[in-house]
Amino acid sequence: MTLAEFSSTAKRLRPRLTALATRICGADCADDAVQDTFLRLWDMRDRLDEYRSLDAFATVVCRNVSLDSVRARRPQTSLEDAADLAASRATAADAAIETADAELTMERVMAMLSPGQRAVLELRHVEGLEIDEIARVTASTEAAVRVALCRARQRVKTLFLKHSSQ
Image (cartoon, rainbow, N blue to C red; front, side, top):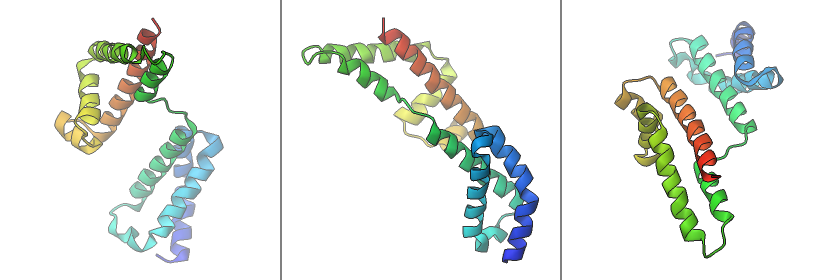
């Protein structure tokens, strides 16, 4: 792809990609996400002819860049961090008891999840399956699996913090 062809394609795609990035990561970082998308596309310009639809591929790249931007800005508290926080408050003598309590709390929290949420969490974090593998196992789409995982993790975090403070 020549510079002129790429420039023409970029001008045509920019409004659509900007709208997508704005919906995902907000107006403050949408331009950066679109610019990063075009940079990635330019870096792989020699292989762009391999894709049936450059528009669809550019949309996927922009979506991924935008989601990465959102993840980078959002502080993450993992399930392990929540358990570590609860354990760090205890004295050295109480550490074993505290850990056992955290494990028991986690078992109770997992029992409070819906079967679908529990299944995707176990497939991902216990069995170690990738998103596409979970989608095949559950007869779902990758997007639906990502949403289910996100919601399940949020629910676990909320329930764990609620029960560990009692």
